[in-house]
Image 1 (tube, rainbow, N blue to C red):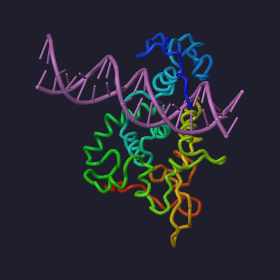
Image 2 (image 1 turned 45 degrees about the horizontal axis):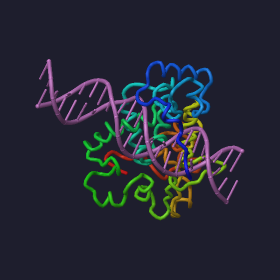
Image 3 (image 1 turned 90 degrees about the horizontal axis):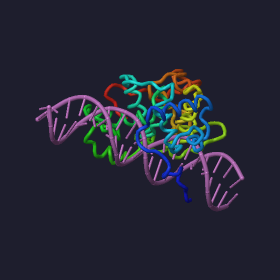
Length: 250
DNA sequence: AAGTAATACAACCGCGCGCTG
DNA sequence: GCAGCGCGCGGTTGTATTACT
């Protein structure tokens, strides 16, 4: 479908934001909240495109942003999440309060990629470097890596394929609702439902199609990121996957 | 001190998706 | 059912800063 430009480019500023523009934007959002980004610039007296205002607010001006260096813990969480989610920066950001998708994306490209390469790990596949077969088997995004991660016959690339159900948001929409909730100042995690469940192969000791929450693979315990009972083995929880051991790769 | 390369990060761009009339 | 709109995402670019020669 055809799309009109998001704004009158001829009458908008571009490039770095000035202090005055920042102040105007912050003052307006404090007074009126985050409403319609398209009409915000005019209402706030800014010669900027709505998209630009949104980006500036989300990535730089939001009061709940955590500035400063990433901690080692955050590094590891990003690496683990990227191994499973791929370049779903907004999803990853949803797990790191105070961090933005743009910030994480930049950090990944400038720091973590190099860190993984130094460890001898391919940052795209999260496999040891030089594993051509591994790379061939797992090209591109993490969803395509799922078969290597899980049972090849029944693993569901949930992120790519799942449609949201009335009961649970999922896939990319989950990402959007997650990021939306952050932008509106609501608590980030409580409503988060990544819904990264996969179907398991029928096996002697596992119920068929039992959902498995991948938060357990991330080393998260119940309540840290989602409502599953990942650390409670048995019928109440999920017991089929465990976090990676030292030296294991996805 | 000057020039160049590398790095970090803010911002832009194009596209896909959901919503609405 | 269709078309347009608005939002949000991920990839890319531009620019400022820092490190190195």
